[in-house]
Length: 117
Image (cartoon, rainbow, N blue to C red):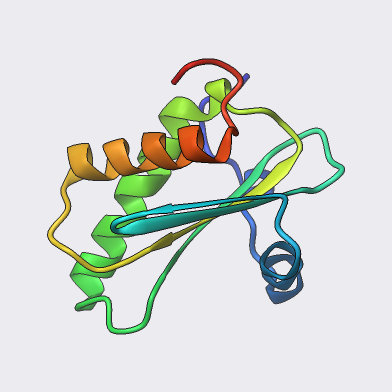
């Protein structure tokens, strides 16, 4: 499995986002983040990061997105394939390690991991 986040591995259209948010198969939340996932019927995962309104300035928003994409890219081999995954981030002073712990907690709470992550 490729570890990169390719164009086909990204969730992009408004209709795809609405499809996941309307009837999710998995949902979990913790302080600072929320995970929503739905089966997409494809052989690949699609991933997106979204932020709540008032998430700080552009630098903070882009940093939070980059961090979470990197965390997903490094752990996607431990996730089942065929799902659309959206992670909603909330503002806060979280660095890489805190976001990684949040993501792992979300995966475990949703019962979404193939192995014990």
